[in-house]
Each structure stands twice: as structure tokens, then as C-alpha cells.
Image 1 (spheres, helix red, strand yellow):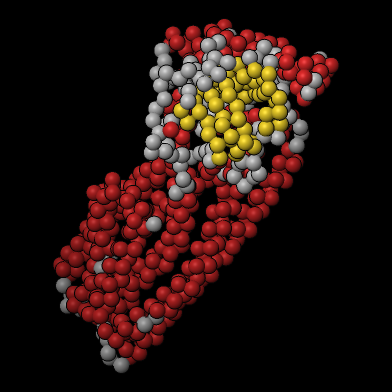
Image 2 (cartoon, rainbow, N blue to C red; image 1 turned 180 degrees about the vertical axis):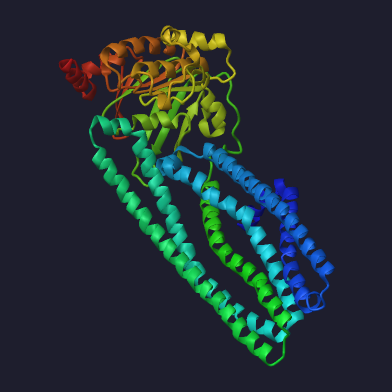
Length: 571
């Protein structure tokens, strides 16, 4: 893990070296104060060397001005290094998240992922900046202080340093407890972020059902859990600091008593004793810094471990034999496919299915039967291990996922639009398309006329998830996106089920236009929308129980006929 962490310093190693040199210079300046103090008390003041007193005082002032400039450099450039490393880690995490399979997002909430990308990485950046500075410079300062104190009085120095093992022991014992507490605290922050993201995203549903109290209760549950986790971490932190502070305070008592006895017995001069007391702070300061570093280290390491948990999650990887598919005609063939989501029982059972090029193939049947799963397997969103799926006679494991998905267009019931302009949302279908092609796609989706009524036209920003548009308008925009992509295979997964009848008829015209010349898989609960399909398959319990055209299935008087008669009667 350390090697992977250090790798993020590499792009910034030059500035990092300057930062460390500046920190070393700052630490070195500190030793001049007790040295000059000792010189003045033992020599300059008793001998009334006023010119030297002013000279060394001015020298010390100049050193402090230089130290101030170095402090500015350290605080500014050092934190910039930490932020840049954080940005690099965030980029790595985001790029890796883009490569993770659907199954990862089935198990991980958006808010929790965002917590790892923001809160955790902030702690890592703090460790990246302050960690080396605190560890290396404090260690050097302690050694320097020890050598200088020995030049004043060896025995008094050894007495003081005899207390160091107690600090080390306390830090070691309490370190694990503090680390566990901070890990739990991080998890609680992720939980509350997940709940918050969910509640804010669903705020309109909450208002519609007047369930603000329920959401408040859910949020407070996470909030209380967060408070309890933080209490544990602060308790561990409090024990750590109070214990180490007690030991450092004992240092001062020992210095006072031992130094007083040495001074009483003539083993040390008053000037040396004064310089020794001042110099001890050069030792205690770095020691306390290292103690504080233990807390920062636990925060940073915990955050980096949670970062690595995502980075080490296995991404989608093309097989070594996979190649690009070109000139796709749209023949699809499922051969003995059995599939179940991770941790669940099988959704599809030994499914064999053939869809010919240019064919409109409808999937109908009860919810949970496996219709959407079939649609998700065609673009290789999930990995099939039992059975095979072929596109134009080529098994999908032998096709790169990118080239496969470039040839498939999907229109779903739950349309996702980005908080961007109408143009940008359409361009998502083919980012390098021209303005004329965007407008043509919008016209074919019957959304152009509406766009032209808007003050900013195609530059209109539609809000988060397209909140400023109606359901029909959002659906037409998603259809325009697919028109622009122009794929040979089209999947319509409940594309109109959330719309009213009038809007559905208008959208259906756009869909009919979209389906021309493409292999189309249609998932629908409203059977009136699939009456004209070339083939209709009834999917139930992961199996195809009926297959044929509308008239043939009605004549069989089976499940499809029952569903159709029920909907016809309801109409």
C-alpha cells in the first residue's frame, strides 16, 4: 500500500523536495534561539557587549523573517501538492468507476461512492502534505535537539529522554483503538451521505406523498449513528491526547526538579539551565507533532484504504480474443443462457432465443420474469457464464464491449438526462455530430418544434435529470439521442409505459420511425404497443412459454391471450 501511495508523489517530486528543504530550514532556524539565549546569558550580557547583543538580536530577527517566508512557501505549495495528489487520485477513481460493471452499482449507493471521492480523499491529501513534513522534519529536530542538549548537560538530557519510551508505549497501545474508531466513523459518514443523496433526489416524491416525517426519521437514524461513531472516535482521540499530554507535562516537572537540583549542586550554570529549559521545547514540540501525526496518519490511511477498495474492484475487461465488430446487421441469438444476479437465484433458465436482423421482437409477460435481464445481457452489461449470446454469429465475449455497445441504442422507461443543455444531451448519442445532424435527430424525434419555442433554444439547460421537461419531452429527447447514434440494434425497455395515452401515441410515432431498418427488441406491458411486432415472446419465470405473432398467440388462448383480453376489457 505504501508503494502505491508514494507513486502519487512522482509527478510533483521537484516541488516536494523544495517543500521538504524549506521545512528542514524552518526546523533548523528554531535551534538558533536557545543558542543565542545561552550566549547572551553566559557571555554577552555579563560582559556588557552591547554591540554583539544588538548584532545577534538582529540576526535572530532576520532569521525569523526568512522563516516566515519559508512558512508561507510550505503552507501554500505544500497544500497545493496535497490537492494535486488528491485530484490525481480522484481522476483515477472516477476513470475506474467508469470501467466498473453494472453489478458494482447494484451493490453500492451513489452517496457512499461520493463520500469516498470527497471526504476520504481530503484526509489522504492532508496526510500527503503534512505526513512527510511531520515525520521527517520532526525526527531530525528531535535528533538535533538531543545533540544540542547534550552539549549543555549530558546527564540532564538523558533523564529527559528516559521518558520517551512511555510516550512511544502509550501511542502504540492507543493507536489501534483510534484507527478502528476512525474507520467506523468513515463508514457512518458514507451511510449518511448515501441517505442524504437518496432523500434529496426523491424530494419531489416526498412532497407528493407528504412523507417528510418519514424521510426525517430515516435521516435522523443515520445522523444518530454518525454521532455515535464520532463519539467513539473522539473518545479514542481524547484518551490518546490526554495520555500523551500527561507524559509531556511530566517532562516539564522532571526538568524543573532535576534542573533545580543540578543548579543547586553547581552542576550547571544559570545561563545553561535557562537555555536548557528553552531548548527542551525544541524537543517537546516535534514530539507533540509526531503524536498529532499518529491521528492524521490514521485518518489518511483509513481514507486511502477505502480509496483502494474501489480502485482494486475488478473492472469490465474484454477477453484477450475480443475484437471489434463492424457492419452489424443485427442477428441476435441466445443459446442455452442461464443467468442470475450475484447472490440471487437464477433469473433466466436455459433460455434459447433467436432474433433476426431488421425484426421487431417483443418481450411481454409478468414483472420479474426476466425481460429486462435479457435486454441487459445483449450489450454485455452483465457477464454470462452459462450459455452463449451471438451477434451476427459472433459470441459477445469475442467482441469488445465498446464496439458492441456502439452498435446498440437503448430507450428506457426511466430516462436519464444530464444537467446540461438540450444540445449536449442529444449529442451524448454521438459527441462529434454536427449542428445540422442534432437538429435532424430532434426533428425525427418530434422535439424540435418544442425546442424552438424556448428562449435559448438548444442552449436551454434542462436541470438535474431533466426536471424542467415533461415526461414526454424527456422521452423524445432520449429518442433524439438514439436517432443521432443511429445504431443497427435498438432496445426499447418499457419506453412508453410511464406516459399517458395521448403522449404515448405521439411518442410511439417517433419510436416507429426509429425502429425502421433496425433489429428492435421491445419490452412492454401494454400489449397494444406490440400488436404489430414480427414476433412476440411471453417470458415467465426466466423461460419463453409462448412465441409467435399477435394473432397466433391470441388463437392459442394461453397467457398472452389472457393478458390481452384483460387489457382490452380494461380499455
